Length: 160
Image (cartoon, rainbow, N blue to C red; front, side, top):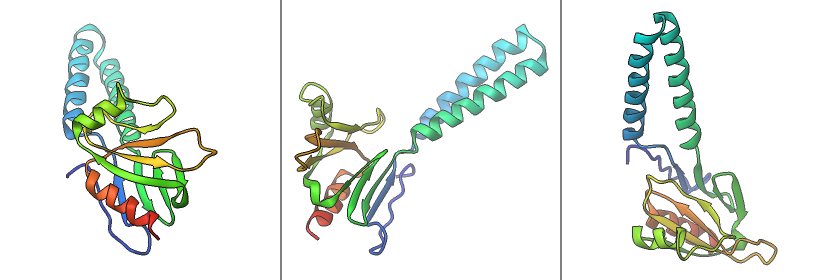
């Protein structure tokens, strides 16, 4: 649970999770940049190699932070997942999915109209039915590290 942050406060949000990239991505990315530095350091002046390496490392960090910046927030009468937000009155049932069910619902059993917040490093998810007739999305599929907690928070939100 190093990569997620859960906050339990009744006044603001009963559930908050940030979908940060795992540590292994940072390690692999850093090793990749080090490999690039090694190749550049033998083929160009040192100052240029170091400058390009710093720029590539900064772009890598920016990409990982941006990609891992997606948040899931349940509270204040709404569900927010990634860039989207929906009021609690339009939410149906929330179902915690195991890795196999999440993979099927994101793949062969998927509805192309569904709103997806998926990350390849998160295998579990929550399916939230949408009961807004004006919304084309039949459900939201949200990847999470804590599907039972997220489903419970959404269920509690819809019962208020």
